[in-house]
Image 1 (tube, rainbow, N blue to C red):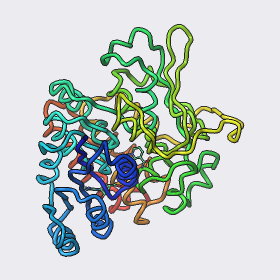
Image 2: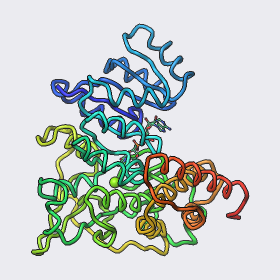
Image 3: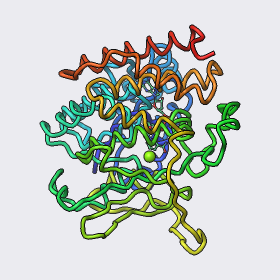
Length: 391
Ligand code: NAD
Ligand code: MG
């Protein structure tokens, strides 16, 4: 029986993880769960899964949850320290890192430092803290399983040897991208895109922030950096290929001309179950893939003129140091401003570019450098949003 700490239980990845736990009550037990604001959703999770500890984002939401669930024997907690604590709890075997954004970094690292198997959905934590993050994984000899579907596919397509051992045989990592809802739109058409349009992903049902990132291709940019850290490569060794059907979830090209891929219907339950049950495979309830029904798989190059975020991400990687934390922070501010109708859709990439080129980039020696860079870049980005720089 594996004890699960589910960080971000009320989100889209959180829900799919709960679905897998429900399917396999003999294998997994929800030990702890967290959410930021969603009291009602968390109350339902508490009734159904009866975790031992639950962490909310504020004292107010914690109190409201405790009131709704007064009859349950659960420790109701709140705040950043409590999040770190549930990830490191001795009853936990696996931490599902499914908080959205930079806020997921600290509890994810806490779980790693406690030696927990880490199921990484929260790409922003790896993107921003990259080398420090991977150093901690190595130091604590932690099993890190990528949950992002592309990286999960790459992981499955690599030989299951220790990190780096495969490198001499791999010629390229091929990261697939759906292209998002505006793949075929002109720049003129994209000017007036609304948050509702941008959140409607053609293939995947996901949280708001990652849906917007998919529409701007920033998601692929973050994933490019994520792949570099996870698989010890540079952007020069990663090709991004647009594949609108999202059936091939990514590929690994080898020096002998072989290309291995992982395929499946686009449902996050597949990579989640893979991570939870590795090295075994378990039922997910996802419909079997029917290639006959799909008929055709298409591929094209990404258009970096219409979607400049992809180039920005590669630039940030080569700049190194805090550049990736800066770009991520700018993007989190930009997406939030777009969702609140403060800036337009195309302004997201403009803001990212401006913050990345303006911010002071320094080397990362300790976590404090990343936290400081995040704070500074957020301030810079917010100033730009509210000073009308984009108008
Ligand atoms: P979501 O918005 O649906 O859920 C986010 C969860 O994080 C919620 O439980 C929310 O309460 C919590 N949260 C948000 N802000 C928080 C904060 N400041 N402090 C504490 N908790 C906070 O997001 P999602 O789509 O489930 O994505 C979660 C993560 O997984 C993201 O990093 C995303 O990039 C990654 N991911 C998601 C998918 C997907 O299909 N949804 C695929 C690959 C990777
Ligand atoms: Mg992905």
